[in-house]
Length: 330
Length: 135
Image 1 (cartoon, rainbow over the protein chains, first blue to last red):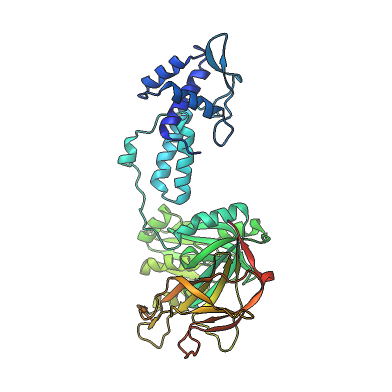
Image 2: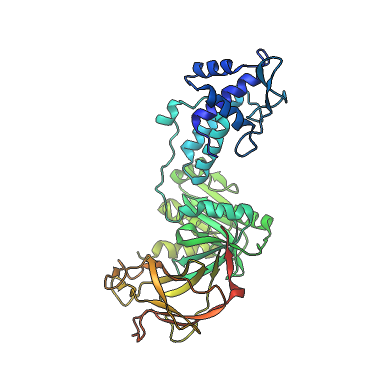
């Protein structure tokens, strides 16, 4: 049952009064008065309904052990440690959560962050006033506001599929082969790279783990089928040894060596592209940089983006691949 | 409850472009998903559409199962024009529900087809290859 904001606020007030050890056994009049101090003006029947709802089982209510104490003529929790928020938050806790929400709002924008926001606001609604932060109107952190890409709407489904290990049937279009295929996939990882979304999954058609770009996926549906388990540890290592998503070859990570001028050196020094990056500066600000990486298409793109500021020295096959990539005609 | 199948269409007379990719069997409808890659012989990829009289024939059942609606495709006489010969289209055709059981179906756009019609013959719908759709 959905609970509106005013109801949440009244539950908070009732909960606060019932947990107040300094003034136990609040009466109906005390509750209404406390609500009025918070700019609410509930009728007695409303508070009675609120108490009844709080006593209801979850998820409709809170299983609140509220009873009317006839001796003291007021309400009480029969469990003195009970709170509808479950975990009592300190003021510092609340402030930290509020700050985190601001940050997630700034960085997020995904369906998951939106769900998280909603969930956290629900938590906070029982402990905090509605946020009136100026940050919501004028954010003080601004990230690149990328346009929504095709297939982004699949994020929730694939997240759910990974989380609950449910196979997915979808149609995939290959840009390179210009070919469609129907895929039954057993996904285990959703990855974002430069605002493009991908899913790693065991593909029954390919009999191996594959990467599928969300933008090339059509009409995914969850299906009842035995989920194929893969070696998560090995694949985590595989994924971590890549810059980007699409490996250029089926092979292990390699020692990659580039030489860059002083301008490019500054950028690589400031923003290492991988944790394996080792940069040795030369006397003129230029640098020799090495990586231990599985060469990927995205790595080639980065190298190509630096133009003449960069020279790929090894491995040789990757040098040739970069030359072909640069010389490719539009 | 819905079931989904990735059919094998390898009959010589059937079209391979558009490619019949999936069949969804539901008590309310039968859905066929197709993928169409624009043809490079046309400068801008050409055009395509679907005849409204397209229907399913289930072997052993006389009555055809008519097309009820479609997503991502234009009904004839209108045409969907590609913008380039590297474009592609994904579309779905919805038909009156066929029985949820193993059967063989034909997809008939035109009873007397030319090479331009989207006809598919002898598509095996096998319950043992069906996957139940969750939710």
